[in-house]
Length: 237
Image (cartoon, rainbow, N blue to C red; front, side, top):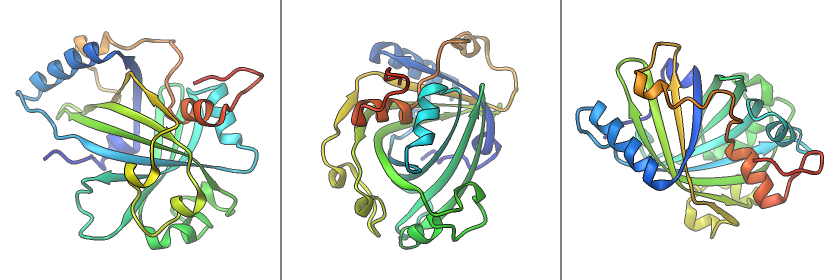
């Protein structure tokens, strides 16, 4: 089974995003499988919880400028390769700036999540202060297509946007779609991210780059759909 990379392509990279209808996504997935020698990656279910400060300044920024924003979130994977029976999440601070993405990530046992978010770690100094609260949960199914040439493509389907209560987000038990309940909104399209380290992409893949088209943000989209969050009177996702 293919596992998620924790290397440089995860921590700092360039990326572009596509939003495709299912038929187009299937064609792309087939081309990616062919590039991997005919292998088809196993899907992984992901639950991501986004956090924000009072007044939701991070959400506002994500809606105003999805290509220049900061996100604080947890992620849980099923299956979680390497968990060794520990209920855990990966806590992540993600900075996106005009096609360049930087991440700092740390695996945290669920029992310690509240302490860490309250400033109990120096690994993620941007979250120090203890005023972060969960505002949105997102569920989706992901296929990852890695390349030994320094790029990878993720394909996300069945995206659901959920309300999230603090006691659920901070629980000692892993989050699942069943625990969250039905989503408030579903995304019928497929979200594709092409991630690389600056190396030249294959022509067929580079040609998919939409250029200056506004990027898709699950955080911004979910806040607009679940909370009717607006900026300057307009909901943007």
